[in-house]
Length: 251
Image (cartoon, rainbow, N blue to C red; front, side):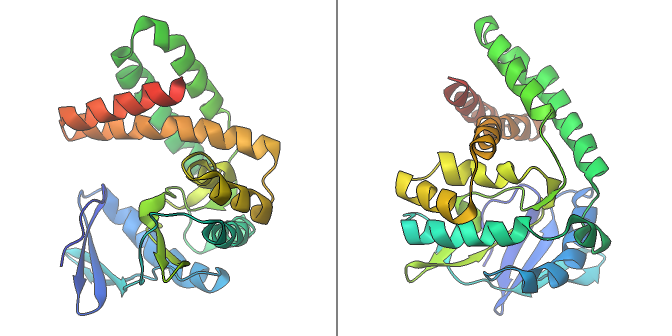
């Protein structure tokens, strides 16, 4: 059975194992980093996560045990407390230790962030109306100045938060894990969920006003990636949907 979605990897369930292959050659290095990092990271986290290993180099194939559960669709306060505990544990992991186990250093994060924001300026901003560009450029300036240096998941949303029998059962897809701003992992949790969920995350994690303000920047930046993805795959519908999100969150 093949799973839908996934911008970077193809995934299929084979005899109880999840097999993943890169969609593009440049994703190979990312998958190899994940295979090196996760066996070390997983025992330090309070929820199940994938622990992939490389089973074939040519073609590149990673394999890990299936993490049970389904996409979180009805977030509750109990779910929020569990996610707050998970993120607190993840963000407290020593950055230097994580780098020694495969996570790219902070300089890599800042280079990648600058490249992304450069594309947003040159490819997305021109698609906006003139009256919207000032707010858009201010957002990009704020994002470029955000901190880096904390171990983060990097792509935390409902499709990567699994639930089963009323409890969180796992967190998946660590392909975008990096040293970054912890607020990036709080963006969806605080601004894309019901108040009782976000409040529980806030209390359990210990979200400060400063963290919340940075999380809002990341929340507003999310749809920009969808626009770029649509441009890369030449899909006008994806671009249009992403632009609608950019405008909604800017306002």
